[in-house]
View: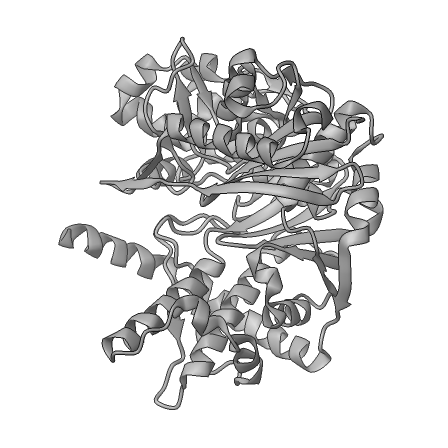
Length: 519
Protein backbone atom coordinates (compact mmCIF):
# COMPACT_ATOMS: atom_id res chain seq x y z
CA UNK A 1 0.00 0.00 0.00
CA UNK A 2 1.38 3.43 -0.93
CA UNK A 3 1.92 6.22 1.58
CA UNK A 4 -1.27 8.26 1.51
CA UNK A 5 -1.68 9.86 4.95
CA UNK A 6 -0.59 13.01 6.74
CA UNK A 7 -1.11 13.34 10.50
CA UNK A 8 -1.49 16.62 12.35
CA UNK A 9 -1.42 17.23 16.11
CA UNK A 10 -3.24 20.24 17.54
CA UNK A 11 -2.54 20.49 21.26
CA UNK A 12 -5.10 23.09 22.30
CA UNK A 13 -5.91 24.61 25.64
CA UNK A 14 -8.98 22.41 26.11
CA UNK A 15 -8.35 19.37 23.91
CA UNK A 16 -5.34 17.59 22.41
CA UNK A 17 -6.17 16.13 19.00
CA UNK A 18 -4.42 13.93 16.46
CA UNK A 19 -6.02 14.08 13.01
CA UNK A 20 -5.30 12.04 9.90
CA UNK A 21 -5.89 13.45 6.39
CA UNK A 22 -5.65 11.84 3.00
CA UNK A 23 -3.70 13.58 0.25
CA UNK A 24 -6.81 15.36 -1.05
CA UNK A 25 -7.34 17.06 2.31
CA UNK A 26 -10.18 14.90 3.55
CA UNK A 27 -10.17 14.14 7.26
CA UNK A 28 -10.36 10.39 7.72
CA UNK A 29 -9.82 9.81 11.45
CA UNK A 30 -9.25 11.64 14.73
CA UNK A 31 -8.32 10.80 18.31
CA UNK A 32 -8.52 13.24 21.20
CA UNK A 33 -8.48 13.66 24.94
CA UNK A 34 -9.28 16.51 27.28
CA UNK A 35 -6.44 18.72 28.39
CA UNK A 36 -6.03 19.85 31.98
CA UNK A 37 -4.57 22.96 33.55
CA UNK A 38 -4.88 24.58 36.95
CA UNK A 39 -4.91 28.03 38.51
CA UNK A 40 -2.41 29.21 41.11
CA UNK A 41 -2.48 32.25 43.40
CA UNK A 42 -1.66 35.61 41.86
CA UNK A 43 -3.35 34.99 38.52
CA UNK A 44 -1.23 32.06 37.39
CA UNK A 45 -2.46 29.30 35.09
CA UNK A 46 -0.19 26.28 34.68
CA UNK A 47 -0.12 22.96 32.86
CA UNK A 48 1.90 19.83 33.57
CA UNK A 49 4.44 19.51 30.76
CA UNK A 50 5.09 15.80 31.23
CA UNK A 51 1.37 15.04 31.16
CA UNK A 52 0.96 17.12 28.00
CA UNK A 53 3.54 14.94 26.28
CA UNK A 54 2.12 11.62 27.51
CA UNK A 55 -1.39 12.71 26.48
CA UNK A 56 -0.13 13.70 23.03
CA UNK A 57 1.69 10.40 22.61
CA UNK A 58 -1.47 8.59 23.71
CA UNK A 59 -3.74 10.25 21.14
CA UNK A 60 -1.18 9.56 18.40
CA UNK A 61 -1.01 5.92 19.46
CA UNK A 62 -4.80 5.68 19.52
CA UNK A 63 -5.02 7.22 16.04
CA UNK A 64 -2.32 4.93 14.66
CA UNK A 65 -4.07 1.88 16.08
CA UNK A 66 -7.41 3.00 14.59
CA UNK A 67 -6.16 3.34 11.00
CA UNK A 68 -5.36 0.08 9.16
CA UNK A 69 -1.64 -0.24 8.38
CA UNK A 70 -1.04 3.33 9.56
CA UNK A 71 2.70 2.85 10.16
CA UNK A 72 3.31 2.06 6.50
CA UNK A 73 0.93 4.68 5.10
CA UNK A 74 1.89 7.86 6.93
CA UNK A 75 4.11 10.34 5.07
CA UNK A 76 4.72 12.89 7.82
CA UNK A 77 3.61 14.20 11.19
CA UNK A 78 3.05 17.94 11.77
CA UNK A 79 2.64 19.76 15.09
CA UNK A 80 0.73 22.84 16.15
CA UNK A 81 -0.48 23.90 19.59
CA UNK A 82 -1.85 26.67 21.79
CA UNK A 83 0.16 29.86 21.56
CA UNK A 84 2.03 32.21 23.86
CA UNK A 85 2.92 31.00 27.35
CA UNK A 86 6.30 29.75 28.57
CA UNK A 87 7.53 26.15 28.68
CA UNK A 88 10.98 26.05 30.31
CA UNK A 89 13.35 23.06 30.02
CA UNK A 90 16.69 22.40 31.68
CA UNK A 91 19.95 21.24 30.10
CA UNK A 92 18.64 17.66 30.07
CA UNK A 93 15.46 18.77 28.24
CA UNK A 94 13.36 18.08 31.31
CA UNK A 95 10.69 20.51 32.52
CA UNK A 96 11.94 23.18 34.93
CA UNK A 97 8.41 23.72 36.24
CA UNK A 98 4.85 23.44 35.02
CA UNK A 99 4.25 25.42 31.85
CA UNK A 100 2.81 28.93 32.14
CA UNK A 101 -0.15 29.14 29.76
CA UNK A 102 -1.38 32.06 27.69
CA UNK A 103 -4.10 32.47 30.34
CA UNK A 104 -1.50 33.33 32.97
CA UNK A 105 -1.85 36.96 34.12
CA UNK A 106 0.96 37.19 36.70
CA UNK A 107 2.93 39.59 34.51
CA UNK A 108 0.19 42.26 34.45
CA UNK A 109 2.16 44.80 36.46
CA UNK A 110 5.28 44.13 34.40
CA UNK A 111 3.36 44.70 31.19
CA UNK A 112 1.79 47.86 32.56
CA UNK A 113 5.18 49.27 33.56
CA UNK A 114 6.84 48.53 30.22
CA UNK A 115 3.82 49.75 28.27
CA UNK A 116 4.00 53.10 30.05
CA UNK A 117 7.69 53.55 29.23
CA UNK A 118 9.50 54.45 26.01
CA UNK A 119 10.55 50.79 25.68
CA UNK A 120 7.15 49.91 24.24
CA UNK A 121 7.92 51.92 21.11
CA UNK A 122 10.97 49.78 20.44
CA UNK A 123 9.10 46.55 21.13
CA UNK A 124 6.14 47.39 18.93
CA UNK A 125 8.26 49.05 16.28
CA UNK A 126 10.41 45.93 15.83
CA UNK A 127 7.77 43.19 16.19
CA UNK A 128 4.60 45.05 15.09
CA UNK A 129 3.00 43.10 17.92
CA UNK A 130 1.52 44.57 21.07
CA UNK A 131 2.71 43.63 24.52
CA UNK A 132 0.35 41.69 26.74
CA UNK A 133 0.34 39.41 29.74
CA UNK A 134 0.09 36.11 27.89
CA UNK A 135 3.38 36.30 25.99
CA UNK A 136 6.65 34.55 26.76
CA UNK A 137 8.57 37.83 26.69
CA UNK A 138 6.30 39.20 29.44
CA UNK A 139 6.55 35.99 31.47
CA UNK A 140 10.36 35.94 31.25
CA UNK A 141 10.59 39.57 32.35
CA UNK A 142 8.38 38.78 35.36
CA UNK A 143 10.26 35.58 36.22
CA UNK A 144 13.61 37.36 36.09
CA UNK A 145 12.42 39.74 38.79
CA UNK A 146 10.10 37.55 40.87
CA UNK A 147 11.10 33.91 40.22
CA UNK A 148 14.84 33.91 39.45
CA UNK A 149 15.11 30.29 40.58
CA UNK A 150 13.15 29.24 37.49
CA UNK A 151 15.41 31.24 35.20
CA UNK A 152 18.57 29.87 36.84
CA UNK A 153 17.50 26.29 36.12
CA UNK A 154 16.34 26.94 32.56
CA UNK A 155 18.39 26.08 29.49
CA UNK A 156 15.71 26.82 26.86
CA UNK A 157 12.41 28.67 26.69
CA UNK A 158 9.88 26.92 24.46
CA UNK A 159 6.23 27.16 23.53
CA UNK A 160 3.80 24.24 23.69
CA UNK A 161 4.33 22.97 20.14
CA UNK A 162 8.12 23.42 20.55
CA UNK A 163 8.01 21.23 23.66
CA UNK A 164 6.15 18.51 21.81
CA UNK A 165 8.55 18.79 18.87
CA UNK A 166 11.44 18.35 21.29
CA UNK A 167 9.83 15.22 22.74
CA UNK A 168 9.13 13.82 19.27
CA UNK A 169 12.49 14.56 17.65
CA UNK A 170 15.01 15.60 20.29
CA UNK A 171 15.48 18.92 18.48
CA UNK A 172 15.09 22.28 20.19
CA UNK A 173 13.40 24.73 17.84
CA UNK A 174 10.75 27.37 17.46
CA UNK A 175 8.92 28.29 14.27
CA UNK A 176 8.89 31.47 12.21
CA UNK A 177 5.42 32.53 13.39
CA UNK A 178 5.68 32.29 17.18
CA UNK A 179 9.33 33.26 17.52
CA UNK A 180 8.63 36.00 14.98
CA UNK A 181 5.88 37.89 16.73
CA UNK A 182 7.43 37.50 20.16
CA UNK A 183 11.10 38.34 19.69
CA UNK A 184 11.94 39.01 16.03
CA UNK A 185 12.17 42.10 13.87
CA UNK A 186 9.33 41.47 11.41
CA UNK A 187 11.37 43.01 8.58
CA UNK A 188 14.29 40.58 8.95
CA UNK A 189 12.79 37.48 10.60
CA UNK A 190 15.73 37.32 13.03
CA UNK A 191 15.76 37.63 16.81
CA UNK A 192 16.02 41.31 17.73
CA UNK A 193 18.55 42.28 20.43
CA UNK A 194 16.69 45.59 20.70
CA UNK A 195 13.44 43.83 21.69
CA UNK A 196 15.23 41.75 24.33
CA UNK A 197 16.94 44.86 25.69
CA UNK A 198 13.67 46.81 25.81
CA UNK A 199 12.03 43.95 27.72
CA UNK A 200 14.93 43.88 30.21
CA UNK A 201 15.86 40.30 29.30
CA UNK A 202 18.89 40.72 27.01
CA UNK A 203 20.81 38.35 29.30
CA UNK A 204 18.24 35.61 28.57
CA UNK A 205 18.88 35.49 24.81
CA UNK A 206 20.63 32.13 25.26
CA UNK A 207 17.25 30.59 26.16
CA UNK A 208 15.79 31.22 22.70
CA UNK A 209 15.97 28.16 20.41
CA UNK A 210 16.86 28.14 16.69
CA UNK A 211 14.06 29.18 14.32
CA UNK A 212 12.97 26.64 11.71
CA UNK A 213 10.68 26.92 8.69
CA UNK A 214 8.39 23.89 8.66
CA UNK A 215 7.75 24.20 4.91
CA UNK A 216 11.48 23.58 4.32
CA UNK A 217 12.75 21.57 7.27
CA UNK A 218 11.82 18.45 9.18
CA UNK A 219 13.44 16.29 11.83
CA UNK A 220 13.03 12.50 12.13
CA UNK A 221 10.84 10.90 14.78
CA UNK A 222 13.12 9.49 17.46
CA UNK A 223 13.08 5.81 18.36
CA UNK A 224 11.81 6.65 21.86
CA UNK A 225 8.94 8.74 20.48
CA UNK A 226 8.19 6.05 17.91
CA UNK A 227 7.71 3.51 20.67
CA UNK A 228 5.42 5.91 22.56
CA UNK A 229 3.27 6.85 19.55
CA UNK A 230 3.17 3.60 17.50
CA UNK A 231 4.48 5.57 14.50
CA UNK A 232 7.59 4.55 12.54
CA UNK A 233 11.02 5.71 13.70
CA UNK A 234 12.49 8.24 11.29
CA UNK A 235 9.10 9.58 10.17
CA UNK A 236 9.54 13.23 9.09
CA UNK A 237 8.17 15.55 11.79
CA UNK A 238 7.32 19.12 10.79
CA UNK A 239 7.11 21.98 13.27
CA UNK A 240 4.01 23.87 12.22
CA UNK A 241 3.11 27.41 13.14
CA UNK A 242 1.31 28.45 16.28
CA UNK A 243 -2.32 27.26 16.31
CA UNK A 244 -3.80 30.52 15.04
CA UNK A 245 -1.42 30.70 12.07
CA UNK A 246 -2.21 27.08 11.23
CA UNK A 247 -5.94 27.84 11.53
CA UNK A 248 -5.37 30.76 9.15
CA UNK A 249 -3.71 28.42 6.65
CA UNK A 250 -6.40 25.77 7.14
CA UNK A 251 -9.13 28.40 6.62
CA UNK A 252 -7.67 29.73 3.37
CA UNK A 253 -6.03 33.01 4.38
CA UNK A 254 -2.82 32.40 2.44
CA UNK A 255 -3.95 33.64 -0.97
CA UNK A 256 -2.96 37.19 -1.86
CA UNK A 257 -5.38 37.41 -4.79
CA UNK A 258 -8.44 36.74 -2.59
CA UNK A 259 -8.23 39.94 -0.45
CA UNK A 260 -9.71 37.90 2.31
CA UNK A 261 -9.82 37.89 6.07
CA UNK A 262 -10.32 35.05 8.52
CA UNK A 263 -12.24 35.26 11.78
CA UNK A 264 -11.97 32.45 14.31
CA UNK A 265 -14.68 32.60 16.93
CA UNK A 266 -13.88 30.06 19.60
CA UNK A 267 -13.18 30.60 23.27
CA UNK A 268 -11.10 33.53 22.07
CA UNK A 269 -11.66 35.64 18.96
CA UNK A 270 -9.07 35.99 16.20
CA UNK A 271 -9.47 38.42 13.30
CA UNK A 272 -6.80 38.42 10.63
CA UNK A 273 -5.91 39.67 7.19
CA UNK A 274 -3.29 38.53 4.71
CA UNK A 275 -0.30 40.88 4.31
CA UNK A 276 1.93 40.24 1.27
CA UNK A 277 5.08 41.98 2.55
CA UNK A 278 6.61 43.76 5.53
CA UNK A 279 6.01 47.12 3.87
CA UNK A 280 2.25 46.43 3.88
CA UNK A 281 2.03 45.85 7.65
CA UNK A 282 -0.30 48.37 9.33
CA UNK A 283 0.75 49.55 12.80
CA UNK A 284 -1.85 51.31 14.92
CA UNK A 285 -1.81 54.09 17.47
CA UNK A 286 -2.82 51.73 20.29
CA UNK A 287 0.34 49.65 19.68
CA UNK A 288 -1.78 46.51 19.66
CA UNK A 289 -2.31 43.36 17.65
CA UNK A 290 -0.08 40.58 16.35
CA UNK A 291 1.98 40.39 13.16
CA UNK A 292 2.73 36.70 12.57
CA UNK A 293 5.05 35.67 9.76
CA UNK A 294 4.03 32.92 7.38
CA UNK A 295 6.86 30.88 5.91
CA UNK A 296 8.13 32.68 2.83
CA UNK A 297 8.02 36.32 3.94
CA UNK A 298 4.28 37.05 4.02
CA UNK A 299 2.25 37.72 7.15
CA UNK A 300 -1.02 37.24 8.94
CA UNK A 301 -1.79 40.48 10.71
CA UNK A 302 -4.30 39.97 13.46
CA UNK A 303 -6.14 41.42 16.37
CA UNK A 304 -7.25 39.06 19.08
CA UNK A 305 -10.04 39.21 21.64
CA UNK A 306 -9.21 37.42 24.87
CA UNK A 307 -12.80 36.18 25.05
CA UNK A 308 -15.31 35.39 22.31
CA UNK A 309 -17.67 32.48 22.96
CA UNK A 310 -16.54 32.60 26.59
CA UNK A 311 -19.02 35.48 26.89
CA UNK A 312 -21.85 33.26 25.66
CA UNK A 313 -20.70 30.41 27.93
CA UNK A 314 -20.77 32.83 30.85
CA UNK A 315 -24.30 34.13 30.32
CA UNK A 316 -25.74 30.67 29.61
CA UNK A 317 -23.98 29.39 32.71
CA UNK A 318 -25.71 32.11 34.72
CA UNK A 319 -29.04 31.13 33.21
CA UNK A 320 -28.47 27.47 34.06
CA UNK A 321 -27.57 28.41 37.65
CA UNK A 322 -30.71 30.53 38.06
CA UNK A 323 -32.92 27.76 36.69
CA UNK A 324 -31.23 25.25 38.98
CA UNK A 325 -32.00 27.45 41.98
CA UNK A 326 -35.68 27.13 41.01
CA UNK A 327 -35.40 23.34 40.67
CA UNK A 328 -35.15 23.29 36.86
CA UNK A 329 -32.09 21.52 35.51
CA UNK A 330 -30.84 22.75 32.12
CA UNK A 331 -27.32 22.52 30.79
CA UNK A 332 -25.79 25.39 28.78
CA UNK A 333 -25.88 23.15 25.68
CA UNK A 334 -29.63 22.64 26.14
CA UNK A 335 -30.09 26.40 26.45
CA UNK A 336 -28.36 26.86 23.08
CA UNK A 337 -31.24 25.09 21.31
CA UNK A 338 -33.28 27.70 19.49
CA UNK A 339 -31.01 30.51 20.69
CA UNK A 340 -30.17 31.76 17.17
CA UNK A 341 -33.81 32.41 16.33
CA UNK A 342 -34.40 34.27 19.60
CA UNK A 343 -31.30 36.40 19.04
CA UNK A 344 -32.28 37.37 15.51
CA UNK A 345 -35.82 38.25 16.60
CA UNK A 346 -34.72 40.43 19.51
CA UNK A 347 -34.41 44.20 19.30
CA UNK A 348 -30.87 45.45 18.97
CA UNK A 349 -29.45 48.50 20.70
CA UNK A 350 -31.51 48.12 23.90
CA UNK A 351 -28.22 47.60 25.77
CA UNK A 352 -24.52 47.80 24.97
CA UNK A 353 -22.11 45.07 26.04
CA UNK A 354 -18.31 45.16 26.19
CA UNK A 355 -17.26 41.49 25.82
CA UNK A 356 -14.14 41.52 27.99
CA UNK A 357 -15.17 38.63 30.24
CA UNK A 358 -11.67 37.13 30.53
CA UNK A 359 -9.92 37.64 33.85
CA UNK A 360 -6.74 38.31 31.84
CA UNK A 361 -8.24 41.55 30.48
CA UNK A 362 -8.08 42.43 26.79
CA UNK A 363 -5.35 42.40 24.15
CA UNK A 364 -7.05 43.55 20.95
CA UNK A 365 -7.40 46.08 19.54
CA UNK A 366 -5.97 47.53 22.75
CA UNK A 367 -4.02 46.02 25.63
CA UNK A 368 -5.48 46.44 29.11
CA UNK A 369 -5.05 43.71 31.75
CA UNK A 370 -7.73 45.37 33.89
CA UNK A 371 -10.41 45.45 31.15
CA UNK A 372 -13.61 43.69 32.18
CA UNK A 373 -17.01 43.05 30.64
CA UNK A 374 -19.86 45.47 31.25
CA UNK A 375 -23.45 46.17 30.28
CA UNK A 376 -24.70 49.74 29.80
CA UNK A 377 -27.99 51.24 28.69
CA UNK A 378 -30.24 48.86 30.63
CA UNK A 379 -33.64 50.00 31.81
CA UNK A 380 -36.71 48.28 33.23
CA UNK A 381 -37.98 47.38 29.74
CA UNK A 382 -34.88 45.37 28.75
CA UNK A 383 -35.85 41.72 28.51
CA UNK A 384 -33.82 38.50 28.50
CA UNK A 385 -33.71 38.16 24.70
CA UNK A 386 -32.53 41.75 24.31
CA UNK A 387 -29.83 41.13 26.89
CA UNK A 388 -28.63 38.10 24.95
CA UNK A 389 -28.75 40.12 21.74
CA UNK A 390 -26.56 42.77 23.35
CA UNK A 391 -23.98 40.10 24.20
CA UNK A 392 -23.99 38.79 20.62
CA UNK A 393 -23.78 42.35 19.30
CA UNK A 394 -20.85 43.02 21.62
CA UNK A 395 -18.94 40.10 20.10
CA UNK A 396 -19.69 41.33 16.59
CA UNK A 397 -18.73 44.93 17.33
CA UNK A 398 -15.51 43.77 18.98
CA UNK A 399 -14.73 41.92 15.73
CA UNK A 400 -15.28 45.09 13.73
CA UNK A 401 -13.16 47.04 16.21
CA UNK A 402 -10.32 44.61 15.57
CA UNK A 403 -10.55 44.80 11.77
CA UNK A 404 -10.75 48.61 11.90
CA UNK A 405 -7.41 48.70 13.74
CA UNK A 406 -5.74 46.84 10.85
CA UNK A 407 -6.89 49.14 8.05
CA UNK A 408 -9.55 48.32 5.50
CA UNK A 409 -11.93 45.45 6.19
CA UNK A 410 -11.19 42.55 3.76
CA UNK A 411 -13.48 41.99 0.80
CA UNK A 412 -14.65 38.62 2.17
CA UNK A 413 -14.38 36.83 5.49
CA UNK A 414 -13.82 33.13 6.11
CA UNK A 415 -15.35 32.12 9.44
CA UNK A 416 -14.24 29.16 11.51
CA UNK A 417 -14.23 28.08 15.14
CA UNK A 418 -17.05 26.74 17.28
CA UNK A 419 -19.27 29.80 16.74
CA UNK A 420 -19.19 29.27 12.96
CA UNK A 421 -22.12 26.90 13.53
CA UNK A 422 -24.31 29.80 14.69
CA UNK A 423 -26.43 31.25 11.91
CA UNK A 424 -27.06 34.32 14.04
CA UNK A 425 -23.39 35.15 14.53
CA UNK A 426 -22.69 34.58 10.83
CA UNK A 427 -25.53 36.88 9.75
CA UNK A 428 -24.66 39.58 12.27
CA UNK A 429 -20.96 39.46 11.43
CA UNK A 430 -21.61 39.89 7.69
CA UNK A 431 -23.75 42.95 8.36
CA UNK A 432 -21.42 44.52 10.93
CA UNK A 433 -18.41 44.13 8.61
CA UNK A 434 -20.46 44.86 5.47
CA UNK A 435 -18.69 41.96 3.78
CA UNK A 436 -19.78 38.46 2.72
CA UNK A 437 -18.99 35.76 5.28
CA UNK A 438 -18.28 32.16 4.27
CA UNK A 439 -17.96 29.22 6.61
CA UNK A 440 -15.08 26.82 6.05
CA UNK A 441 -16.22 23.23 6.40
CA UNK A 442 -12.89 22.05 7.79
CA UNK A 443 -13.63 20.97 11.31
CA UNK A 444 -9.96 20.79 12.31
CA UNK A 445 -8.47 23.82 10.58
CA UNK A 446 -5.46 23.99 12.92
CA UNK A 447 -4.33 20.43 12.28
CA UNK A 448 -5.10 20.87 8.57
CA UNK A 449 -2.91 23.97 8.38
CA UNK A 450 -0.03 22.15 10.04
CA UNK A 451 -0.18 19.23 7.61
CA UNK A 452 -0.51 21.65 4.68
CA UNK A 453 2.87 23.01 5.78
CA UNK A 454 4.15 19.44 5.82
CA UNK A 455 2.74 18.97 2.31
CA UNK A 456 4.84 21.89 1.07
CA UNK A 457 7.92 20.47 2.80
CA UNK A 458 7.32 17.12 1.10
CA UNK A 459 6.78 18.71 -2.33
CA UNK A 460 3.08 17.84 -2.55
CA UNK A 461 2.37 21.58 -3.04
CA UNK A 462 4.59 24.27 -4.46
CA UNK A 463 3.62 26.71 -1.71
CA UNK A 464 0.91 27.44 0.83
CA UNK A 465 -1.30 29.25 -1.69
CA UNK A 466 -1.45 26.15 -3.88
CA UNK A 467 -2.20 24.09 -0.76
CA UNK A 468 -5.02 26.48 0.11
CA UNK A 469 -6.59 26.33 -3.34
CA UNK A 470 -6.48 22.54 -3.42
CA UNK A 471 -7.44 21.77 0.16
CA UNK A 472 -9.51 24.70 1.41
CA UNK A 473 -11.39 26.23 -1.53
CA UNK A 474 -13.49 23.06 -2.15
CA UNK A 475 -14.66 23.17 1.49
CA UNK A 476 -15.90 26.77 1.57
CA UNK A 477 -19.66 27.19 2.00
CA UNK A 478 -22.04 29.67 0.43
CA UNK A 479 -21.69 33.32 1.41
CA UNK A 480 -23.88 35.08 3.94
CA UNK A 481 -24.28 38.58 2.49
CA UNK A 482 -24.79 41.76 4.54
CA UNK A 483 -28.32 42.92 5.28
CA UNK A 484 -28.30 46.65 4.27
CA UNK A 485 -30.65 47.77 7.04
CA UNK A 486 -28.73 45.81 9.68
CA UNK A 487 -25.42 47.13 8.31
CA UNK A 488 -26.68 50.69 8.83
CA UNK A 489 -27.72 49.80 12.38
CA UNK A 490 -24.26 48.48 13.15
CA UNK A 491 -22.66 51.63 11.73
CA UNK A 492 -24.56 53.57 14.39
CA UNK A 493 -23.87 51.07 17.17
CA UNK A 494 -20.17 50.91 16.35
CA UNK A 495 -19.68 54.59 17.08
CA UNK A 496 -21.39 54.12 20.44
CA UNK A 497 -19.40 50.97 21.18
CA UNK A 498 -16.08 52.71 20.58
CA UNK A 499 -17.11 55.76 22.64
CA UNK A 500 -17.97 53.55 25.63
CA UNK A 501 -14.92 51.33 25.21
CA UNK A 502 -12.50 54.27 25.05
CA UNK A 503 -14.06 55.89 28.13
CA UNK A 504 -13.69 52.81 30.34
CA UNK A 505 -9.96 52.43 31.23
CA UNK A 506 -10.11 54.69 34.32
CA UNK A 507 -13.15 52.76 35.54
CA UNK A 508 -11.43 49.40 35.01
CA UNK A 509 -8.32 50.52 36.87
CA UNK A 510 -10.31 51.94 39.78
CA UNK A 511 -12.26 48.69 40.06
CA UNK A 512 -9.05 46.66 39.85
CA UNK A 513 -7.55 48.70 42.69
CA UNK A 514 -10.69 48.09 44.75
CA UNK A 515 -10.57 44.34 44.10
CA UNK A 516 -6.95 44.16 45.26
CA UNK A 517 -7.78 46.00 48.48
CA UNK A 518 -10.68 43.64 49.16
CA UNK A 519 -8.70 40.43 48.68
